[in-house]
Amino acid sequence: MRTLLVVMTVAPAILYWFGLPTLNARRYAAALETKDFVVVDRMCVDQQEPFPGEMKDWLSFAAQAKLEPCSWRDVWRGERRMAIYHQAHAGSFVMSFVGFHAVATRKGIELSRRQDSRLGIGK
Image (cartoon, rainbow, N blue to C red; front, side, top):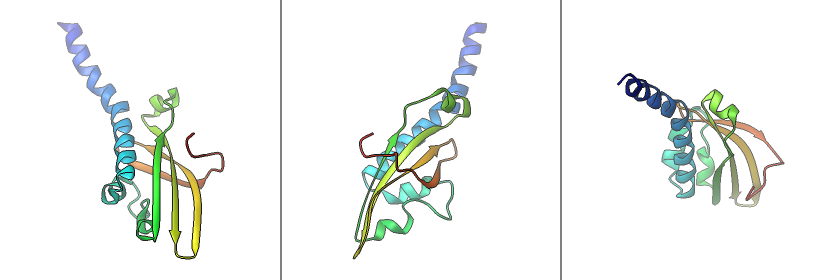
């Protein structure tokens, strides 16, 4: 009986610590894929500069998010790393594919605006 009590206490804590960031990352990636930008903007922790923000209203916009492989660092910090790629066209101004990192936490998605040239489509 004591073992059951310990399991029933520890399992929800583990799910909250690591399961919720993974769930948030998957929800964010699915919302980007289905172009549900209201949900995508709402999931960003920084509501002053959400992604995609105003870019979604440009002439053409496409984005995708990929979850990075899970590491012990993610488990220890209670987060899930992601790579986000986007392409936007605004008339004559063309932005080619750009990649940057994001971290899914229990609060939502924290974006890093630092672009990384090592990120590539399909990686």
